[in-house]
Structures are given as structure tokens and as C-alpha cells.
Image 1 (cartoon, rainbow, N blue to C red):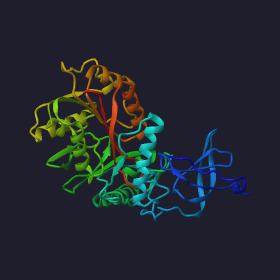
Image 2 (cartoon, helix red, strand yellow; image 1 turned 45 degrees about the horizontal axis):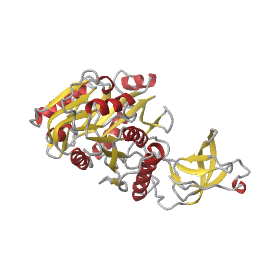
Image 3 (tube, helix red, strand yellow; image 1 turned 30 degrees about the vertical axis):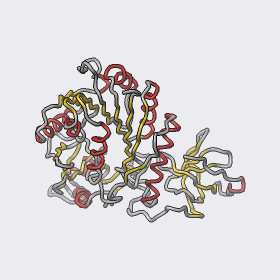
Image 4 (cartoon, rainbow, N blue to C red; image 1 turned 60 degrees about the horizontal axis):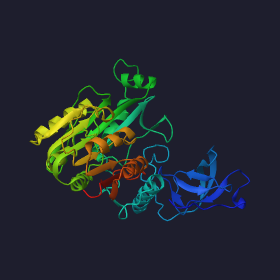
Length: 418
């Protein structure tokens, strides 16, 4: 994202600390500057325009990681974090940036990743759709319990940082987070001051899922879960159910716009293929726009939820394949004319190279719609499709995770002449 400023030898302090300017933000969220020897310095919790005194904590041949120990000049966009645990908890890393600054930075991260990694320049400038709520937007989270502490892992660590509140959660989950912490420290009869959960948590870290649906009634479930109540989330005219442990987008206030964007991108037609379908957040819209839809999902609990959600919506033109995308190529039925549209929503690792080749060679879509939570793997995969003669059209961002550098991106690729 642009060149970072160098510092002179005079900026090397006698204490071994270094004074430098922050001139960009990296995809991981850190501020970027340069040492006197030219190496890039990644400094978390800094803003563009900051002049900071830093201490190097990790050295590599071409870059270093550092922490700031003093701010000599505050950059434009700095603000006061809204969480008392900010800086230790690894959940958020951009609460020190105001929201307008975060959005501009995410647009830059997307554009820079596409160009640097994929050599791709979208047909029009990238814009990121803001979250209606910069705080209090998350309706789902996972917390860790370790040594009697409830919280999130510290930055670049497996150690759990205890948290008593979390301002990015919706209010019912804030209350449940506090209640869960208290439940692990309260005395129980016959426990000699230690709850059974607390004794277990001292042996290893365990994970709990906190989730809430449209009803506002929260669900608190230890993972992995064997059954348990579903959370129902309203998305446009539908109610979708998600079982414990099944992935669901956590920003409850941007779902309608995200689904509408996917619907618009896929268009209409006869046959569509959806890879990584999950519990059906996008499947219902696809089914209403295409005569037949093949939905592929590996998680059996998600497949069960998908079936429930399709039935509740009165949809019967979707065939579900419970299989890993990497292994489906040998058994997935391909319509005679192929699939007009393929929609993919892969994990952060992106699409395997074999899946890219299979989509192009056997599915033969005229359009590919790719929803990604990782700009780096998105850029890599788009470049692979470009090598196969696809053209990248519009790319849009969606800020599903304010106060973090994470950004969701929706990209459309077309085959020329189709």
C-alpha cells in the first residue's frame, strides 16, 4: 500500500529504540515504517501519520516486527479505543482508528492485494460497504476458557486474555459473556470453592460459542456440541436456522445487503453450482433465480440445517451434496451445458488449485462469483482464473468486522464473449 518513509541514522536512539514514521497499513492491520537499514517495520496499534518510538521484538532478513513505546506525533484518524481490554485481547486491532479511516484503509488493502499478488486491477474503484454499526454488531462469537479465565487469545499467542466485556458484541451476548465468567468462579456445593468447569478448564483450553438470533434470546454452548438449540436469524423474508458450531456470518446488520449483492451478481438462469454452501445463507436466493441448484457442503450439521432452511422456505429445486469440495470432482453430476454460474464462498485458505482447474474445465461457467474473507487468497485465485481467460469485473468490499483489518470481498468474473 504505497511506499513507507525511511528514517535517518539520527533517528536511532541511544537506548536501542528507533523513531520512525508510519506511512501505510498492512493487510494484517499493522502500521508500516522503515528502519535506517531499509528493512520494513511492522508496528501494531499505529496509524498513518504517526511518528513513533519503537522497540524491535523480532528480526528477519527483510523486515522486523516492533512495538511502539512512545508517540511523538499522532496521525490523522487516531481515536480512543472503546474497550478496556484493547491491546491485550487479540480480538480487535483497529479500535485506535476512527471508523472512516478503517473503511478507507480496507479499500486500500483490497486494491493493493489484488494488484501485488494477482496483478489485477478491477474495472472500477473498490468501495467497502460500511457496517450500520461500528460497535455492537456481532451476534456470534467463540470464546476460550483457560485456567478459569474466559476471553480471547492474545495477539500472536495461545494465552487467553480474560475479558469481562466486549463492545463489538450485541448487548445480549455482552451479558452472557459476563455471566459465563462469573459461573466459572462461583462456589458450588461440594466443590470446595472450585466449579467443575473451572477445574476442567485448568487442564486445557476449551471453547464456548455465544450466539443470538432475531428473537434476541442468546445461546451459550460448549464446543464441540452434540445437538443443542438452533439460532434463528432473519435474512430478508426468510428465517434461517444455525445449529451449535455451524458457521454463520456474525454481523447481523449487514446480512441483507450482502445477500442482495450476491443475488445481483449471480443473475438468473437454468443451472447454478454453489460450493461451500453452509447452512444456506445464499442458497435460498440462488434457488429463486435458477431452475436447478447444486449445493456442496462438507459439514454434516450445516447440511442438516441447509435442508431445514430449504424446507421452511418451500424450496425444492436444490440438490445437496455432502462432500468436501476437493473430492467432489469425480462424482458431481455436470449438466450437459455445464453450470451457467458457479458461486463460491471458501474458507480463508481459498480454493485449491485442483478446484480452480475443475471449475474451468468441467463446470464451464460463463460467470464465477467469488465471496472471500481473505484478500490474499482471493487475489491468488482470481489470477488463476484470469490465466484461464476469465476477466475480473466489479469487486466490492463489505465491512463485516469493524474494529479489525478483516474485510469481506465479492468479485465477479466472466468468460469473454459469453
